[in-house]
Length: 370
Image 1 (cartoon, rainbow, N blue to C red):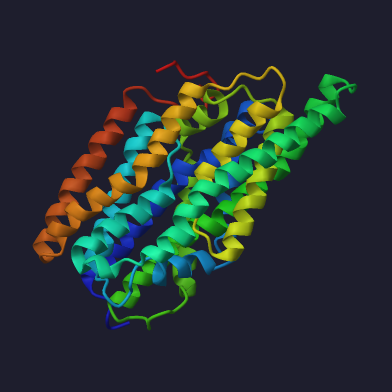
Image 2: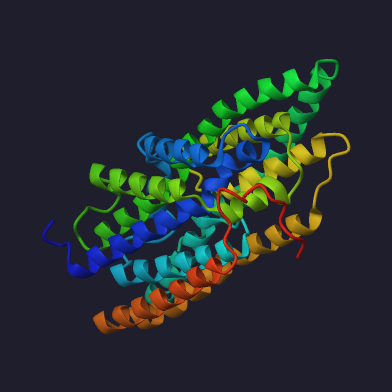
């Protein structure tokens, strides 16, 4: 490991910081519906999700390989480029957390890397064919598929239990939600934790510490799993509120349908190496349940804001990554300057969030319309 320089260590730490923000940003993916329906108490839900995210990180490395050697040319990438991409992703995660928008941490990471490598290595450093095949097409298809499956499952659930007692149906599906929400957390670990594994592996390859095309070492898998698990445990309460109460009023059959549908799509994509957005999958599934339940009200204004955030995520993170790369690739001083600016910006966003805190005690309050 003689190739691991101080700069590489800085990039690895930055990658784990991103992984941590990914955890609290995406806690809602697994647990928002279970918290909203009362199937799980808020703090219990995030604890279960955190543990299962760690477990899921050890189940596969296919997505990590897509990141480390798929979307960019690992022979042209340098640690400052990776650092710049991570800064773009972290700042976008914090901004959308502040706004309570469930945008994609995954696309923030992809955008940051693409922008940074494009500036640092030129257009030949980005494999646009892989970006389209492994990222853009799944981004368009996955929420639609999850939404359709969830809509169908919700319709069937209410049709089959139409003559049963409401209390019995609700209790049964709440129990089912504990299982299905746990599976979403496990699936989230197999998909999202791998993205940070891929970034760290890419950094080690670019520094010469690993050969091109290498799989993530065990310590990288463990570190990424623990970072995302800790972030998940702390809970992204703002985004949990938006997904649990902002899109549609969720009942337990809908929550079960959304979680089961999302798990199926996420696990299938992880097996195929598609680095999709779990946020988009779960959001699509929740919208599908609103369409599948008769008389359910879908808040399309919230859905529209989310869709806009999805569209802006990749190009916005790419723009920040590109700007940071233009400075960071000038040398150690450039990395230091961008790190200080990023820390100041992150501190400002966090401080702004403390003015109107959302926590376990008020997470099930319906968000005020914007």
